[in-house]
Length: 130
View (cartoon, rainbow, N blue to C red):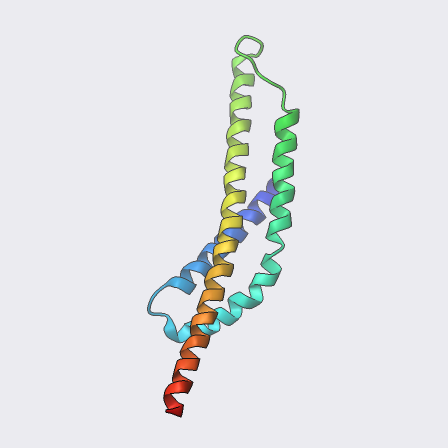
């Protein structure tokens, strides 16, 4: 079960790097190429959304079927195992939330950059026509 979390982590990392490159100042010469690459990568990255929903359902199912560990009904090692399981679930839920948020930010910022480029081209066209 660890492979899907690794894939989701790498995907979130790639989204963060693309978002960082897209928003860094001083990369105006590379921005057009970056926008093209990112826009072509957004459609395959959309598969993150159902994947995250599946993993969220998996976390919920594990939470519902997890044996409870009361104060005196379990040994210290079982209690530690229970706490580790809760921590992993919380970490994985945070990873899911960050991957979805980064995808949404990447989509929004890319759309804004494309719109700004279109408006700049329109302004230049109007200046030339005057």
